[in-house]
Image (cartoon, rainbow, N blue to C red; front, side):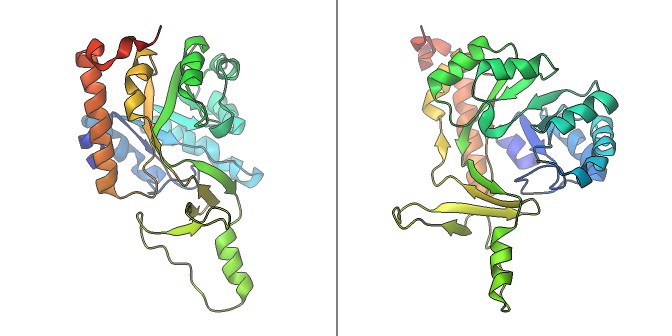
Length: 269
């Protein structure tokens, strides 16, 4: 976390797999105060990831966790399941929250719906193009965050499909993960050149996009549209790669703020 902040991140998304999906490193509740404090001392915000789809037997853990998140001084929680909102209103009504419904955040009306219920930020769907993003921001009455770099989740199952398959074989086999830059992939017969990374954690199996998003060249237009937050997905990448990406985007953002006209920000009508 500290390395990413030093590389240029102004906020970090932290949490644990009990409440957040695709969280490569767990920070349990008892360590949240330390992590949030570290981020704040470094001049960054700390958001807690709670984007999991919760089952009935998991709901009882939400009140205590939200209270501990608030006590830790987190700047907001990020989630999409309305069960979290119900517990927020009852137990931590003053804790800010960001609405992130993954692929369903595609229009300003839906974003505004959640804004009227207390969301301070909407996370736009990764499928939106530049024009759609600008239009959503123009019409939504709240902050908007978009993903500008990294892979995206295109399929999710709560089952551990890979481990289940290995168990089905009935032999002594082990699923080996070699690290963030090497891993498991799905390859379609029709498209052998495309490899779909597979990420499996305690919450199930996630199939990721074969190609990364990269909106570095579009940053001037997005900044000119007053997009509030740019998200970089660090999943399945090395720390060195992520630091390089963060430095590149930080440099581009700072350059725009120093001289917007020089970076083509007036291209929007």
